[in-house]
Length: 181
Ligand code: S3P
Image 1 (spheres, rainbow, N blue to C red):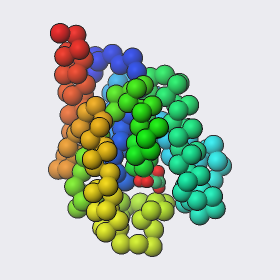
Image 2: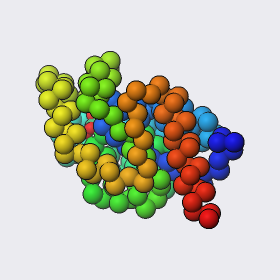
Image 3: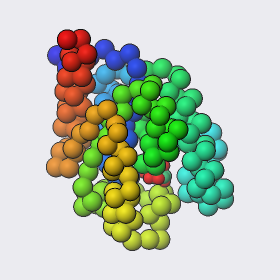
């Protein structure tokens, strides 16, 4: 049974804004009986300030430094499903820590899907007051080769969030079976 999977390390979801990391992560955690944590939420708590305000008041570099520290702390905290902000895995040090301490799962989605999904929620400073399609296209070109370093890649395009969770469960089962053989 897929939900009898025993996970003894964290699962870290990476991918662009709108890929579904938080929604899928919450459902995956529920199925695996693991805690779910969103690194952006932890950053907001640590800074006592919204992501948009952190970008505006302190700048993106400060946000990235905070993001790195928060993710390091969470990785040390033990098995959980961790949804990360789209830029987290792009930072070389953060990526190395994620790859060493967890199973990294890239939720891959097409430009059109990302444009549609990001239009549903604001609060993303990289897209605010800009043409989201152009920005996301540029980020796909820059970041997809880096996300490709994740241990597992899941295509999410036409899938419901629950189907994406099923695919992750299957991929984890395969990974565990391969390790045991
Ligand atoms: C960012 C993605 C956001 C958030 C911040 C920067 C990025 O998270 O961390 O706005 O660089 O792609 P989501 O991917 O959860 O939207």
